[in-house]
Image (cartoon, rainbow over all chains, first blue to last red; front, side):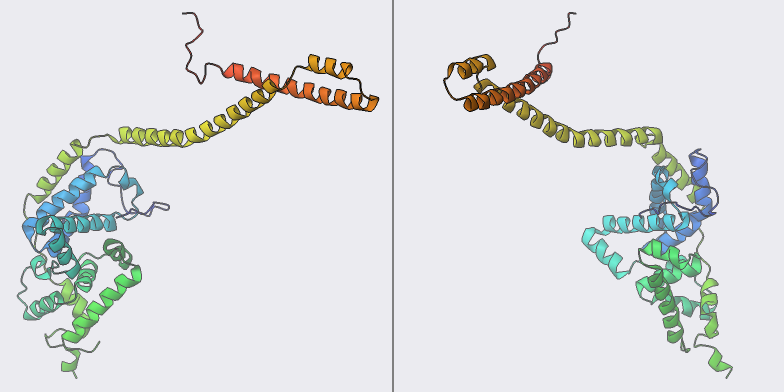
Length: 185
Length: 155
C-alpha cells in the first residue's frame, strides 16, 4: 500500500514507533490489531495455520517499515492492507503464480465459515452460510465493515478501491443477503 | 404481518447486520502473540541498515545523482568555452603582425583616403588582437587542468 502522507495527523493514538523503543511499538501494534488481522487472514486464506504464518510475515514487514510508519496516516487501514498483500503473496507462492492469481481474482479464498465458530442458532447458521455465498468483493467489504468495524474509506484503502465502490459493495452485499433470505430490500 | 417482518431464517429483516455481528469469531491460538513478536524482533534485528544509516544512504545517493546530472552540463559548458578560445587563437595565428601591416600601409603608394581606410582597419585588428591575447592567457591558465599535467608544486 502506498502510505498517504501525513499532512494532518488525526488522533490515532500513540504512533507505533514514536517511542523508538522498537518492540514496545510492535507489541502495541499487536494488541491493537493482531487479533483482527488474524481473523482477517483466516478469512482470506481459509486456514488457521496459513493465517498464522502470514500474520508473522506481516509483522516482520511492520518491523522493517521503520521509516514508512512516519508517513502512514491511517495505521488501521495500513495494517489491513499489508496483511491483504501478504496473504495474496502467500497464495501466489503456495499455488504458483498463475493459480494464485486465479484464486485471488475469483475470491474463492474468502472463507467466512473458517472465521466463525459454528453458531448453535440455526438462524445465524443460515445467515453465515448465505453470507459465504456472496460475491467475493461484497463478502470482503461486509467482513471488514461488520466484523472489524472499518469505515468505508478504510475498506477502500485496504481493497484498493474508492470509498463509493467500497460502500456500494457493502450495500449490495447486505441487500443481496436480505433478498436471499426472503425479505424485501 | 408479523411473519412478513421476519425473513425465512427467522431474523427480522433489519437485523441482518446485527445478526452478522452476533457471530463469534474463532479465537487466536494461544502463544501466537509471542511467536509473532519474536519473529518480528528477529526480522528487526536482521535489518541491514539502521534508520540513521538509511537516511545517510539516501542522502548520499541523492547527492551522487545530482552530481552526475550536473557534470555533463558543466562539461558541455567547458567544451564550448575551449572551442571558442581555440577558434580565436587560430584566427589570431593566421593574421600578420600589426607592425608589418603598418609598414605595408606606409610603403604602399596609394591615395590619402585609401591609406586612412587601411589604418582604420589596422586599428580595429589591433583591438581584436588584445582580445585574442586575453583568451590565450585564459587558456594558459587552464593549462595542466585538462591535460593532467604533473603538479608544479615542489614537494
